[in-house]
Amino acid sequence: MSPSRIALGKTGEDLACRELERRGYAIVARRYRRRGGELDIIARDGNTMVFVEVKARQDHAFGEASEAVGFIKRRRMAQIAMDYLLRHRLTDCPCRFDVVSIHFDEDNPVLEVFQNAFDVSV
Image (cartoon, rainbow, N blue to C red; front, side):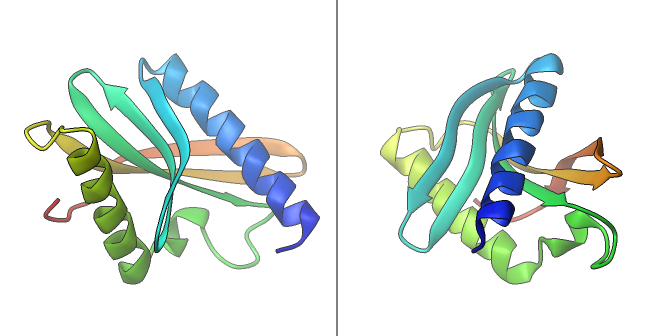
């Protein structure tokens, strides 16, 4: 991955965290890595654990950022989320998956939060 893509991803995650905190989420972890992948952000929204995927794009050339969360990514997120819940003994805790989409149109970020973006049996 190129340094510019890494920087774009980091900037996107920073913006996403600020927006989620503005909405009342409490950030619990960032870049939670396990075998098979990573969760960008883990947060609490009230008593609900929220596993967040952040997708940042420079432009719309490859479609909407949120469209990049396909079946395989959703399945990996669910597996890593289950690992997190088990390791932290939170198996009775309600959870959901959100996606934060960021487009840097002419250097002006446009951010959308999709709550409960997809459903999996976690």
